[in-house]
Length: 69
Length: 223
Image (cartoon, rainbow over all chains, first blue to last red; front, side):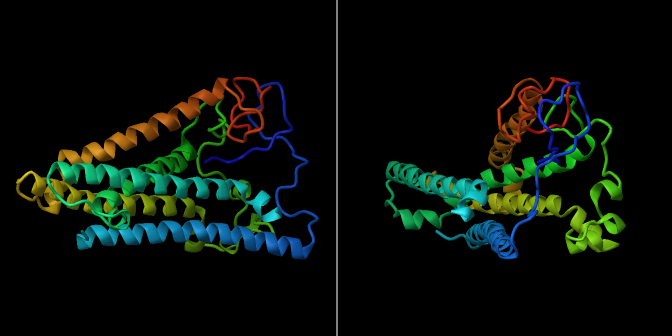
């Protein structure tokens, strides 16, 4: 939706800039096996959504074009 | 357990999507059969209803408006700003930003996607891939709505002993534009109010809100 800026929270003063974060945003320090399984899970979720949309679109466009009753 | 925790956002919305589609199909079948009974026609089964243009049109007319909303929001927020909003980026960041800020080309990180490191057309495509995907789904859904809506419209014409219309005629028919615009207006209201409401309102813990203690004029921060 938009670029996420990770703030340190409660940064008073109306800052319009991101501040440094001590959060780890990727796989910092994770074991290689954990990282691989997490990446596989993320890829599965992404692919599931792509397939759901692709199949739904293809199926119902075909229904409309062929005038299925 | 780790799979559920790390993917709970996508899984939750995927689950309520399937539940909502199931509910829509059951309610839609009842409505369809009530209309059929009024016109002295046979009722159809739930499985049969799933492959009617009436259900397909209802499904895709809502899909298209959601993907239109996100396509416009993705591209509009590159240039358009809202001071104080969590939905806007920082006021001096309008535009596509520098390669350094976007971590592409020579500024790419070792673990950046390959097409972010690449030059030329591949980097350009990848730099806009989210907008391309959402826009493509919008146009395909809108096309799907139009063909299913056209078939369903002609089915209704038949029930009322009226003449069929061509696909071209349906594209300028009030039914098509009424269905499209009634969905668009609700999306634009929701997304516009989200941009405005996040100036003054908060949801503790949500990245869709500023931190609770953030000043009202703080732009682009995320809680």
